[in-house]
Length: 192
Image (tube, rainbow, N blue to C red; front, side, top):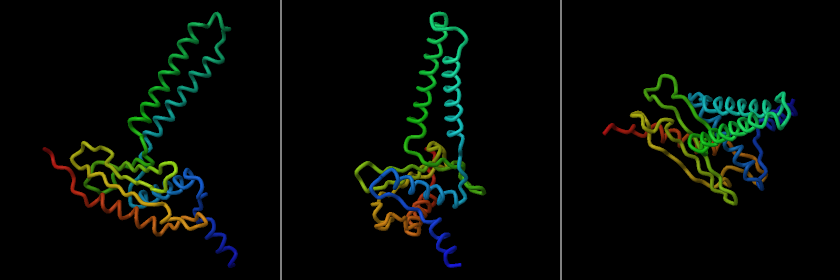
């Protein structure tokens, strides 16, 4: 009986390799997503779906270029068109990543029953060779009347991990919840 309890505890433990900043950031980002969605914000996956759709079109273009019926000298113009389309679609995909997604780890809809009409954009940074984790909460539509001010915190990840690399979720949850509450209590921008 006690073995099952220990197994259950070990399954829920989030452990990171402390020498790998990507592992640390991944665990923190997953936890942030869990915390934000537990506060009534539903994830908005429209941008992810758009990226997947563009990626699928890019793959289809590449497959059509590869397996076209005619051999090389005859299909030269067709291949040039496919290559150009491939480059343009990849450029559009990169433009979306650069302008819309940036460092975002989560896009949300506004919580149900809320007076605000915008969701959240949650983004994070953990620079290489640094222990400073920055979490930012912005409005999904910063030009909206109901958009709140951007809030962020920067703290050392050493506050949330044990020496064995286990995330102390209680401490991290408190910090993220405080940031969410700070964003929620900000007065919306007034129209000028």
